Length: 241
Image (cartoon, rainbow, N blue to C red; front, side):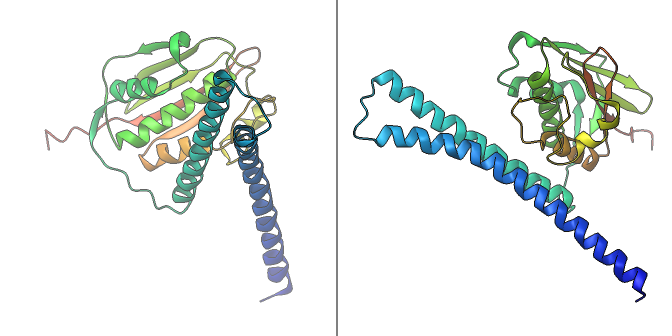
């Protein structure tokens, strides 16, 4: 091996170590916040010197439950990301009406309420894993709700051999040079501010979309929010073959 090859290999190792360090720091931070809240709330509940009424105890118990669920979601996201990056995800090839999968995703987003505006085009059948596709749409809708100051629009439209699902928010938008980078794990846009989020949702959404033959990308224009677009191939009609 030549000196240049050795130097290149050493540089690659340094970059790999830098990425691992960044990931560990991000994971540590995301775990520490809910753990701190759980320990604080649990400590208050068991502290013999504190006088708590029923409302205080209920609030502390709800904090423990909420933060525990947040930890569980984070662990699940990390496991999904590791499976996706290892190519260990298997997808079914069932036939589904895309509007049914989108509506299931909407129903599962508890905070949506009246903030979602649906514009579903004519029925379109896609072939893929409904649970993974639903996860794609859930992640994108939750992301849009987190950053949007108003309503979020979910639209479907057939375009050639694909159906496009577009999730549009009214948030701060995304800088042009970040439109691709925000799909990297733990990457958050410069305009994210103090909003909570692990930075894994978009990476997982893209991973599951690609596992089902689809694509995901982001769009943002000056003075507007952001739009995340999922392109899913239409099911192939085999009746004539």
